[in-house]
Length: 82
Image (cartoon, rainbow, N blue to C red):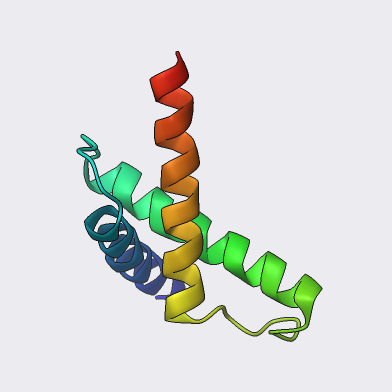
């Protein structure tokens, strides 16, 4: 059941990141979900290193969305330079 919740929350965070980031990305369901999961994982890692979260504590919605937008911005910048 944990994987299903992770996929649903990852999709919601990825969709929020796509909504907040200007531009058109042709991401499907899987890429949007991976974007959200990646943003959440990165937010949890950075948050633990900065003392925002304790080990085992999930990252918050706002931090996860911000880091997903950062990942999306880096991704689109990388594609623009290719």
